[in-house]
Length: 330
Image (cartoon, rainbow, N blue to C red):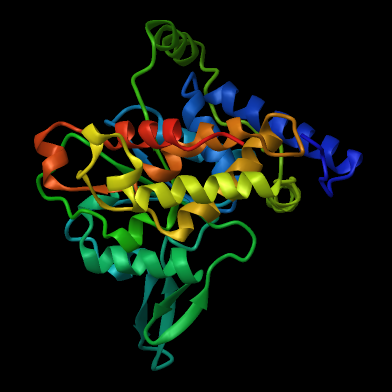
């Protein structure tokens, strides 16, 4: 593919060096979980939020904190519960008896990296407060609007797929705001042994930052300049459109299971993450493999299946595989 990127050789080299520093820092703290590393770094380059689904204990918090520490960014963790209030996240106004006025106390959402642990345990009202922060890059406290950090603001939300009691499923408007959804699996025996060795030797302790928030801003600008051919944009559009016409685009045995397809935000996510993926793999242009490699992460939380799919044990992953097999690769 012809390279028409606007990235200079020097800019590309600097970006690759920064990406290597970030990757090495991550690997020095987190064992395995390469899918999680790719998801976090690519979402960071694409300036998006990420939804992670896994059982407890798979290093989600450690990985998120590691990325924040690597770039000297502020980090906050919010444990979501049914009684969590919007003010617990965004902040509130507290009356000051000495001045006779209300002082604004900012909540934990005012950080570069915000980890929402078990986000589906919070109420719809609390989820909507986070939606404003993610969507509008602002929050409202006592009728006054406050802007979020204008450099890097990334929400990393987690869900537990096992426990469903006492949970509030995320609304479509909420899930659509996450640029991708990643599924994590257990580490291999070899990786688990490495975890034990590192804990015993004390090598998993926090280390000095290797990058800055400004470095991330610059890498995001570089990622935006990665070249995407018109044929790649058409390919993305056809993939997303196929989710909306599943009854005609999918094989006969998979028709009648999709209740709602992906919105145009899926196409935008495809473009941004494909460019980030290309840059992470040392290229200044997007290939079909970049698009295919992120297809499941981009679409799995945007395609809604009906009850028939649940009854017949049809997964959204099977739907996405069928779409990838149906749409010709440019």
